[in-house]
Amino acid sequence: MTLSFRLKSAPEQRVDLSGLTPEALAGKTVREIEHTVIGTTRIPLKVGDLFEVTGDDAQVIRFLGGSNRFDHVGHGMTGGSLIIEGDVGQQAGRLMSGGHLIIEGNAGRLAGSGMRGGRIDIHGDAGDFAGGPLPGEMAGMRGGLLRIAGNAGERAGDRMRRGVIVVGDHAGAYAGSRMIAGTLIVGGKAGPLPGYLMRRGSIILGQAPEQLSPSFVGSGQADDVFLKVLLRDLAQKGIEPDLWPAARQWGRFVGDMAVLGRGELIWCVKSG
Amino acid sequence: MPEHVMATNGVAIDDTFAEAFGMRATAVIITADSLRWARQAAVTMTGFATSVIGCGCEAGIDRPVSADETPDGRPGVRVLLFAISTDALQKQLEARIGQCVLTSPGSACYAGLDGAEHLKLGANLRFFGDGFQIAKRLGGRRYWRVPVMDGEFVCEATTGLTKAAVGGGNLLFLARDRARALRAAEAAARAISKLPDVILPFPGGIVRSGSKIGSRYRGMVASTNDAYCPTLRAVTNSALDDEVGAVMEIVIDGLSDQAVREAMKAGLHAAAALGPHKGPMRITAGNYGGKLGKFHYHLRELV
Image (cartoon, rainbow over all chains, first blue to last red; front, top):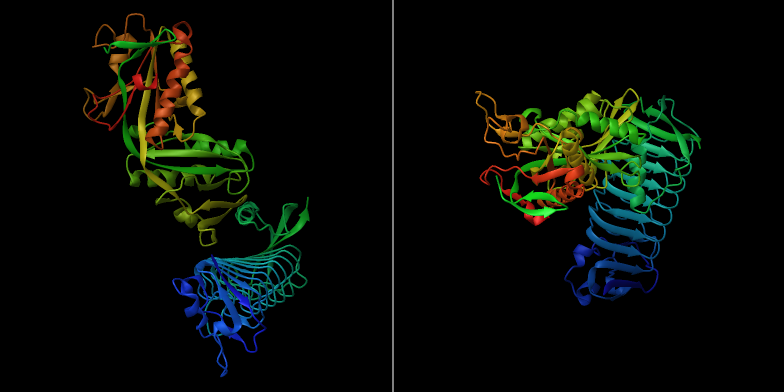
């Protein structure tokens, strides 16, 4: 039976849910789980104080109710599924390397930060620095798939190194800033200066950016074979960004020439 | 000469077996903007790949792959390659993809076989990109995008290797004349071409110069199969009846024992269905007494 955490009432402090992942809870009894400390202030707070816990199968964990104070949800997950019926706070899915994290509401900043594998689905919006690194870290997302059905905040994919981020609607300013490699797709409009200081990697936009950095240079038409491979792979995962398949011609800019200049910005210039 | 123990549609089937060998094999899917160009790349890649004796590998087109099945949604073909060792297969794969597929307009190349072991596909060809190549990892698969003059050559980094492949399944069609022998072999080749995981590496799937091991000349590893040459009937230990005027052979390579067995069966039945007036008088198979290859396909089990 699915392990469920029913939220009793809105938390009065930020809570650290990094210990409530499929691998951390495997083999634990409900009583043991209820005694797990999740508080982050001097006021003690345990799982049992905030949630009514039922079930025994930790491979599928469901939170019935969410809050933007739920931090570190799915931290370091390696397998299984974790579903939150509501919002989460910051750093959801940080450092996860496997499994499936589903957030049915909105996520705070740094969702998918440093993730290496697995998949995160955010049905609502995500805050700034989705897939990005913490201050001082060399790289952000290093693999896996981060899907944001709604909007992403500023600097989505900051210092991303590998993996795929799909933003269904719009992205804030500096999408894909300082990207090292990887793929960022924005189905809607991207804010000013996408790809700011990106070294390598691909940013694919549904619409022309409102402001492009002058250190990006036109590179003619993009060859769409790889785009087809990418889209087919996403379609097999049930993700169909609103860019295709009507697009017939893709423009390509390369940059950021202020740094290495091996990145690319691609968007539809002519649709069929 | 083996006793003809069976007859199908008036065609005598020898009570003998085809002897085949274990091989290493791989598969790739080649796509292009049109099936015509995908096929062109595949035909070029599988040219001069009839026999490991002289070509380094045996290769052929397995089947067309519909746009729905290919990784990039374009039409494609699946090509199989067979060799006697993993090293030889790797070398041939790289050379043939590099010279024949990379060079073909609009082409892309993907793994055509899953396997625990892998061969390098784009992993070395990427260096053609001279530093401008781009790596992408999607769903556990790694792709290389190599810039070329018509856009990009997209190539998966690796493809699967199988060590369970079988090479050298064969059927010999003995007929009154060359037209009938050819008709029998064509019917067999046509039937086998519809089956998955097998190829017929010789021209049009047919070989008219079957060989035996060794030669009276030093350095020749194979020479004409004199026992089946109608013109040598009087001067050699012939395996041919007096009425036989021509013999054609088909050689089958498959990714598995079962695939070769199915192909042998389909080929035998298709040829025998012609009957002795239109096709073969007799169907037999080549072997080396059972001492060399571990896969034996007894015709009596296929009838």
